[in-house]
Length: 228
Ligand code: ADP
Ligand code: ADP
Image 1 (cartoon, rainbow, N blue to C red):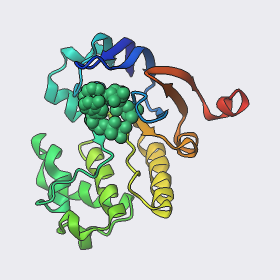
Image 2 (tube, protein in one colour):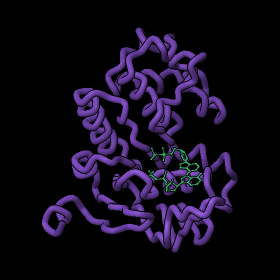
Image 3 (cartoon, rainbow, N blue to C red):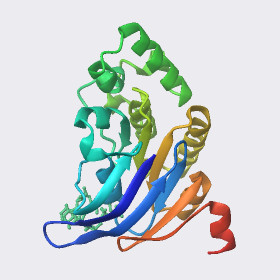
Image 4 (cartoon, rainbow, N blue to C red):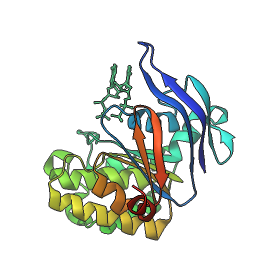
């Protein structure tokens, strides 16, 4: 589904963030990427939707080099949930969720139903919240909106970069449950970055351990427990 072939990234200042990464994310899989700050997790994620170019190597999605995709086609098909809550502050919750579906020219009625369905899925009261601005929601509620905004236009791939970092432990646990349930319901390919080992093991079908720009281990949580 997503394939990295010998991918290396050296930033213009000479920092080598990734060294010869080979990685295959399977269709419908939830892969967690874990490792200390600076090991290359965010660089890996940003390369998947072409925010950053590899210095060497190729990345393919559905067996097609990502350079051969139209950039809009590529990005519309990838939902990206960022660490920092990146909702547009001047827009209402429903306007925030609608950005990509509107670019894809969804019908108003379909979109409205979709928003109800998504908000319901993560336990937000649509009637109460859809006309509000992000600042009128709690941090946890905003992060839920960030997650469902990434899902709104039904992308094949969802990238989540420490989406729960700003949350208290209780909201975090709730959202972890939501993500696991979502994964089971919608069977999307998800790459989930965290630096929390418990989170990586609890969520991942497989866990990819990174250190200083290389993959140290890549296996199921069960096997990682047996062969740490
Ligand atoms: P993370 O929280 O994932 O570790 P960082 O705080 O390291 O991310 O980086 C945040 C942003 O700053 C990233 O988008 C990254 O591209 C950029 N960045 C990180 N390190 C550097 C650097 N040494 N020089 C320039 N930009 C950097
Ligand atoms: P992580 O997400 O695991 O914290 P990053 O991918 O953000 O790691 O960063 C990997 C390495 O690349 C770090 O050493 C970071 O400082 C460096 N880096 C990230 N972005 C930039 C950038 N724009 N310019 C220079 N160095 C960067």
